Image (cartoon, rainbow, N blue to C red; front, side):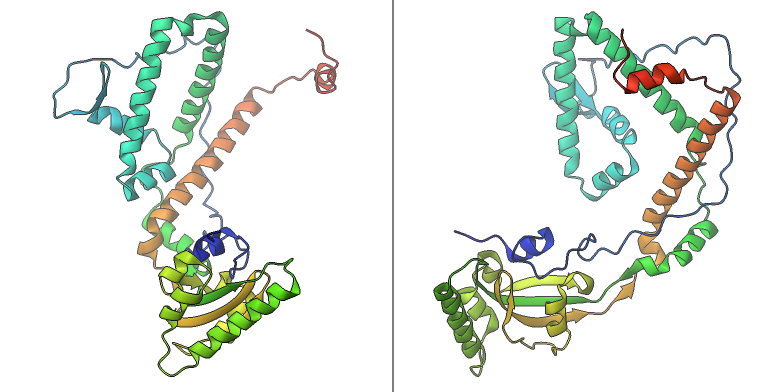
Length: 345
């Protein structure tokens, strides 16, 4: 049976793991500690009115509207996706989703396909008049109400465009500088001989003889670690790369491995190490010193986090003020019956 790529197994926490179980992703520093922004402004909720007219529903997306061929990004059936459609779709996404699209333009293709799929579904809904069914209309009204509340809360809690100012970003960066530290990283290569936990003595002895043989080969003058890894390591994918595991953050390497690796000189090779999945021989290819990410490197991340936290504070403050002005009255008896499953229609 072909074994999975060793490095992927490390990061995924599978049996072939030299990596300690930590939540941080490789080569990515921990997220900054929650930012404590200055006291957010408290938006005043609108004065209660006896009745407010519901806003008119947004017009349905026009299907088959004539467009310039340069403006049409994609088409399915009689429905087009234009540049404006895609911009509207992207602007409605959250900051993280927008960041993903910005970093991976190829993912825009998937976004366009999703828009086209939605258009096809809407065409079928309209053709079958499915949305006119009483039960469906009731659900749609609930969805519409929830969406309207959410959009309104976003509108009253969104921080000003100029927030945060440069000095505020600098203060947050300084306060969270420790979280910007990228730990030392080791570039490792390995030769691995598998030993199952429940293996019998004969198999365990055979694995020991093999790792001893590998060690003898490595001690031969002029021995090529990569060539030996390709021929003797049990992990096919990393073996094809001469045993290369890439850069691994120090704080994610298992302690028993870290203790061996930290004492090696560049190019040094460890003694065989027995872990719960088998024998490992490690080579220290290179070491990358720890460093602190600079403000320009993390600025966008900090801005997104500060704006998100400020919006959450303003939102909570707004809702608390709204409830203060309009205190709810609860029928505790009916509520307790409902929770006990005793209420009746």
